[in-house]
Image (cartoon, rainbow, N blue to C red; front, top):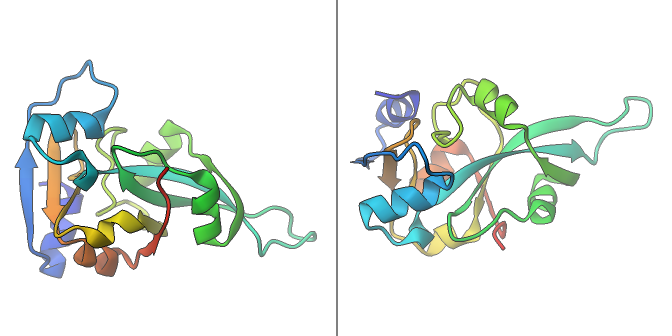
Length: 165
């Protein structure tokens, strides 16, 4: 299995694996998952990495930046201003895809919020709170994990905030 599934198993988190045939010509991985599995796209979340600049940086230290994870429904877009606000940062920009892959250990389109090489601060769009189950990447293209949003927030020590536009 993937490191994402291994982490959920280690924590004893109830989940369900959803497998579908990935189309290598697609560019919208989350939408593909929702359509292939016949799921409500509002319950399928994409895992995005961003670089935030730290508000707590001082002039003597210069600008401090760090990577964070933002989870939003595939029907929306990540609002970088809201992500920065939730992270207590001045601004946020999308991370370079190569940096995202290298940092998480996953390929783009298969980045899971679970089992990342280096655990990152995670922020989840507030719409997850109204769902009974949400779906996130299982750590490879063609694999989704279905679980209770409260379990995701607890395991990842995630912050829930308005992130989607």
